[in-house]
Length: 296
Image (cartoon, rainbow, N blue to C red; front, top):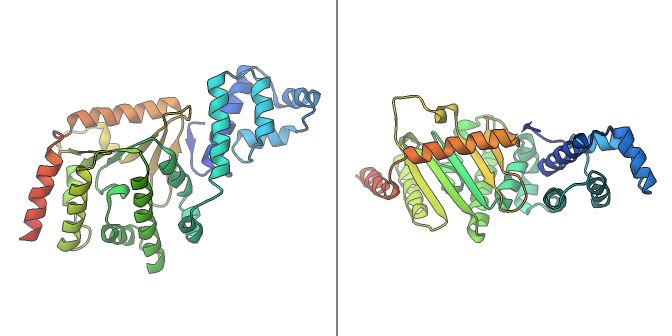
């Protein structure tokens, strides 16, 4: 499945379904044949159930998944991948309290899959053209930014999303994930709030640049067109058998790309832009200079 807007069950469920369908297709079996074979093993199912599982619209039990994987002759890597995703799908139901508090808004924005991926990924690769990445924003910057981008939201909803963003940062700080952020230079000069708020944001970014788990690079303005002008994106990388995945945020929700070709394209674009970024020591020097100017 190359693209997912909002899986009916969950993003892991969509990935599980895609993997099972790929295995079935490789065996040249139709759903009716699979149902018949399962019945011979003493497992009851039907074509409608299997079809919904493959579409990510219904959760699959571990017992059924193991039977299907065995029937399809799945190798150890694919088996580990699918069973691992089933564990993730079960874990996501125990959502943090703050997610439950703002569940209606998070669901309407198709944002819960993003939150889950952010918590699970071993490395997060971000490219931002006009804004500071969410994991590096201050509360004031986040609150003002959300209000500007979503004028349809009530003040308490804006505050809720800003609080959630800071909560995500605290969760990240408690883990051992790696964060690679490529930020276009104009994001540092685009005013979000008054000079005091921007100074606070840049000081926060300067502190983050000194943390070992953060790699922050600045992409200078260029008059020539490059692949990055297509817009910002995030790539979630996993050290286990879970496939890497790309997220592209729109104004109202997120779109996910799961296909290997899509992930490779975005990863290669990020690598190419990273090589064009300013030297590693420049973010700290440049931020110190900008902060000094805001103080005058």
